Image (cartoon, rainbow, N blue to C red; front, side, top):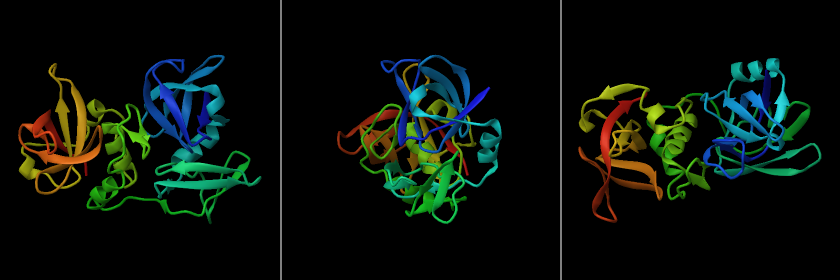
Length: 256
């Protein structure tokens, strides 16, 4: 069994071993994973953070040892705290990173991946934050365009948005909305919810396909076209621009 780490800014995670198939998620710099299957040009991986699986181009990651992977899993997590920032390596080559990228073995503005060493002088995030900080973090992504499979300020989907907001506050959510809906405690009414709780929505077949983060006063922030704020009622999401309901409420969950 091999193990790997993302050594590029944002790498596509695809549903199959081809650049032409569906983008299901993204792997950010510093995220590590187990290699489940390796072919000539593609590898099927399972991410350590959320156990999500998909295919990644072999040219877009670096191999690490099993011991290094275990060490990363047991080490405190340090994440890039600015929407966009950069790092430099020992050769003074500059790379751009986005918020939520990992800084492995970070100490005194330095970190390393294998033998390659980097310098990072921007803001970083570590540890668990108060639940009240979730909405503040969510506002950082406001107006980010919707991108199926996206996890960054340049494009994000609904569950990528909720996952990243929680991740930046020290909490783990699974990747897809249907998976996230299995976590936490069910709330019976919107009135029982607090800012930061999650609302899930289903389609005509009853499958959960959308998630948003509840705000105070019956508002919700979610990714739909872009990261936006709409009204939330017992029917679902009411779009403040089109003056109609766009999503049907299925369940409300308290994660923390």
